Length: 117
Image (cartoon, rainbow, N blue to C red):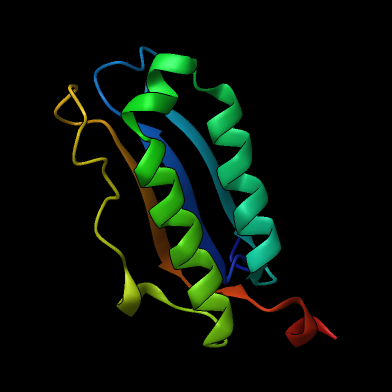
């Protein structure tokens, strides 16, 4: 359970009917410091690693789009919940709800690492 000091909250997820794990594959955060773009990319990579080959194929362009979103967010100094992206999906998927989600619940997220100095 997040503490009152958790000023930054969110999650990166791979979801869909082809993932049997309840809630899909998720990396979430609830903490007192912003998530850097590099951390966001690491979260995304960990989720992709959890996917089997079929699950990766269902989301191949979704992972690319999510990575681009994180990198662009960093170039702009970060994003907050007002910049919540729509789910990222592969237009050629055969699992209708296969997607990659980035949820920004609270606080500036995907900041450049230099902003922490």
